[in-house]
Length: 303
Image (cartoon, rainbow, N blue to C red; front, side, top):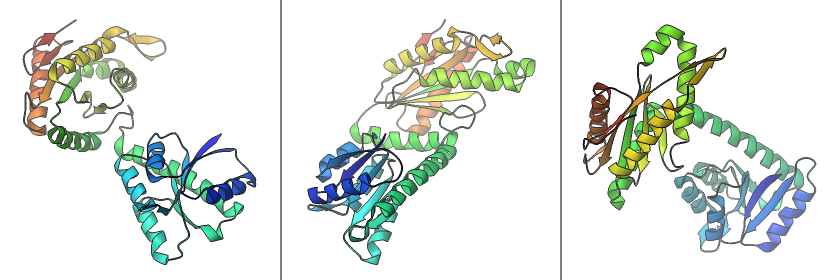
């Protein structure tokens, strides 16, 4: 069942859309209606819909504003823009705002609406795949270095604006070169994939995990102070070393990692200092025997 959100302040128009859906030739859809800008935006941001049909006029506000606000909040639900306007500029404005298609209400038929929905859904899938290629590390599925840099700068701005702490954990797999040298790069790839999976399960959904180098990983923890970040790092290190990793043909390898932790503003006033402090702590963890956590404040945690 494909869930569709209709945001339109006209109940009659929603009933008309329902009638069109009942005449579709293929697919199974579940419609939900929101008649106000605020309610519609709130539902859209839940991410629980495959596609949204959005009216241009929504009381004192309009659909273009809603699209922009949703996009700014990270919404990626495909949107089909509906309007009674026939001005040639409206469709361009809608597409520039982020809508994937545009329909004039007086010209909508079951066939055109069904075609538009299929187009928006397919294009939405393609765009999401392209976003993933641009922001994710192909091997591990974690954020890539470019996206890590972007998000870290974005979170720095947010932390300073709202006076919240921002923590960074730098993680390096111990003796990873030996894994590749002794067991081959396929084994090394298997280790990285499994470590990434374990790390992703050790953090909240609001936090970020990234692969920033060969065996170098990082965790960005929002609204988290150094003490809490040290706890997260200890848990992550324990998960990495907790069970041998299968690397092929039933063969398993035991893997450990070292971590350095720092917090802004406690250990640094900005991202460059935060990275330097966590990197310095990571170096200390490795020189002190590996398989441990060291914070910028000198706190240590080992096996």
